[in-house]
Image 1: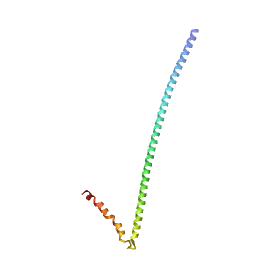
Image 2 (image 1 turned 120 degrees about the horizontal axis):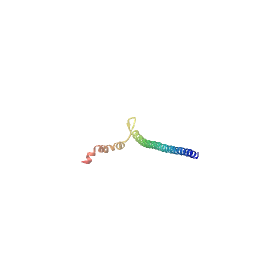
Image 3 (image 1 turned 45 degrees about the vertical axis):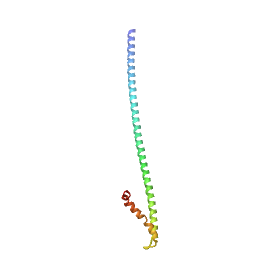
Length: 136
């Protein structure tokens, strides 16, 4: 009888050991799956972070471009305003000179003022067609 009891105990022990081995293997498989999933999650996170970085960089670049264009537009506006102010001054000056010259079509300005007005014309004509003369 003692032999049979020992055999039963051995069988039970072997069955328990087999169950234990199976569970250990199952646990190892679960650990591998967990590691794979964790790695996959990490890769996805990195990918998302990279996408966010890319979009952020693109936005920053677009913003910088817009600000640069805005600066250029501001400069052009300043130039236009300066040119307008200068043209307005020239016009006002010309109107003052004109009002000095005529009232109701009557020329009031003495001859020297006319000479002063017309003085630049010969120099201008020289400048316009004088290029050839300078070379010759």
